[in-house]
Length: 496
Image (cartoon, rainbow, N blue to C red; front, side, top):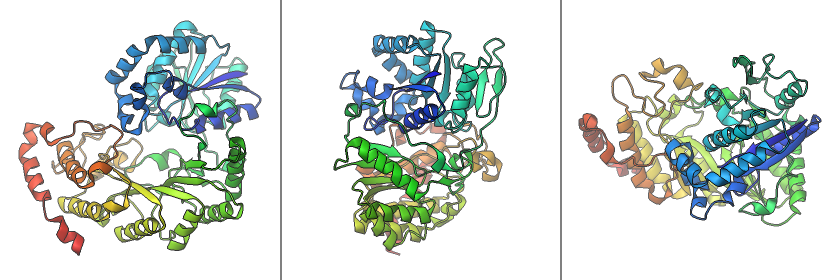
């Protein structure tokens, strides 16, 4: 069966979508024909130069703002109408949208326009934003969406297309999907699929559809070494969402790297971004991968997100550098041991500082996040984190300062009463029962860290306007008290 796969803005402009590549391979392997279109890069090249800045990381928050995105829709009404009409008249019965938080609104908009031209097309939304812990079943509030895939689509998407080809769409529930019956409009929830356990059995991504000359950075691609996470940090839902942690074999990964290098023509300057939750979840395979890259003489640079763990010795870090690692994003989140314990992290500040220092010595660039206002973090805890940031700021290229956000399926959300949280569904503006941790208090704490890291701040445009001046008057006394308290001489703590 002929299926169209689509990825809408915004995502990276420097490489084709890895998800589209994987799904293209999965469909082809199961006898279906995939027409794959990267609308992200196509629309990027179609807008004016000033609007191209909206694809930069610091504008990530723009695309989740309905008012701002409506302005984009209005400016490019003719362009989007033309794209939607082309999709609707492409001669396919099914269109699959690969969706993330920054592409959700535009995907829905294009889908509505497309259905106006061809109401009979079956549309399915999949991707991380469709997971139950994120936007999930809320997508089905949009009557123009016929189904969502609630987890990984590699195995279940071909089966879903099989049912459509047989004329059985909407007649029964299907594992991995929530489907709308077109006659009754009722939803059929097949629950989440069983995760793919042996990732080595999956086909490598197919990029035959991609015009690599369209991307803004040459010879740059994305890959994944694993799925899921070995940890269950209390603020995060990713480990729970992906169920079990799975890591590909080093030999399998090397085979994919070679395929990509061959596709690119084995040029110099190749960079591969590993999009895993953590690249070093399986230290044995990870170290073997570094050894094989060197043994095979593969010349490329790479980076990804990593976990602080004792096995990250200076010997391993040196191997990583020799194998082409040039940058890492650490899952730090706090610079204080009691808070790290509350977060259910399996490392302490001393270990993190040792590894950060070792990576700096060998020349690996580093970034990290500090979560603002984890429930249970005291004023004293925060001062220790501020001292940590002050002491180690020089080692980082960029530092993100996200507010503590309550995600469904995370331990904090599911056990809100244990954390003394009174309004768990206020994802960003939650507060504790005793008023010791509120959104205005978190705003003040974030301002203090911003003043320390200065131009190294990385926030994706999600927290515009979070200045002292916007603190509500009702909280003024507690904020003034906290502000004075946090000007405690941090230098004393650094000297200890």
